[in-house]
Image (tube, rainbow, N blue to C red; front, side, top):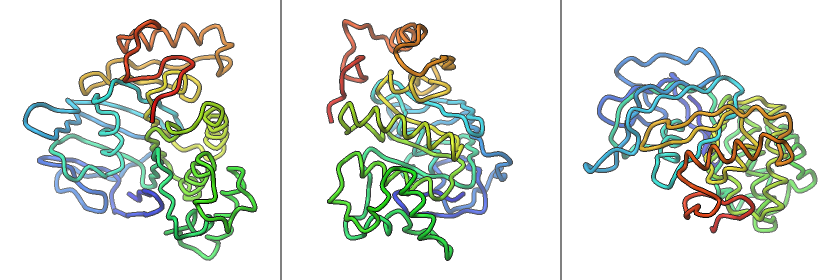
Amino acid sequence: MATDVGGVTTDSATATVTDTAGATAAGSTTAVGATAATTAGVTVRNLHRSFNRSGGVLNGLDLDIAPGEFVALIGRSGSGKSTLLRALAGLDRDVEGYGRISVPRQVSVVFQDSRLLPWRRLLANVTFGLEGKDAAERGRRALTEVGLAGRERAWPGELSGGQQQRAALARSLVREPQLLLADEPFGALDALTRLQMHALLRKLCAVHKPAVLLVTHDVDEAIVLADRVILLDEGVVGTDVRVDLEERSQADPGFAALRRQLLDALGATGEHLGSDFIAPGTRRAS
């Protein structure tokens, strides 16, 4: 498996991780039952993860993501969303657990922080770790795709927050990943920029067609972007809803009903949402 994390790629001969007594890091070969992934999708079976003896974060989780499918992951704080994402990325080296994880060979990760290297110019950030004589040209094309043509020599500190996240998307997608893992990538952006980034991400996914797992606290964001919305509850999949709307906006008659279904599943109402997820029309505090 090749995993791009902030522009750094690690490789492994197998795309399947099977744990017996602990998480296996990306770049290592497992001893029990490891087989190469045969598709660009994701399969997780009986996944357990724990950080201490008091209880597990993931408690026998099963999950399938088809090639090219966009899945949004919601749930209260501590429900295991980021833990699952890190397990799929091969980044949970210091946790206890077991289970079967099968992911594609090419995986990229986007975080809430763009994680651009401040001492490298924009094109150098996008192509960092990218091999091949055409790396620079591929980087320029990726920057053009995200609306940053002509900014190749800009320093990260010269960019707005939204532009930095555009660059982070370019860095991830220039590698043509089969799986894109996104951990609240728009959580720190203002409302207008978030809407612009939603449209951009849908456009990019339509072109590059990776499978996507998006972790978010924003129910509306999940509905607008995803083919399916999954709610984690006590470390397992509590709700799995397919988004079947003609129009991906609040103008669609089914939008409000689906939002209500998901908020009810979260144990929330419009009057009492708590602090773990986003109320419609509001922005999560950074």
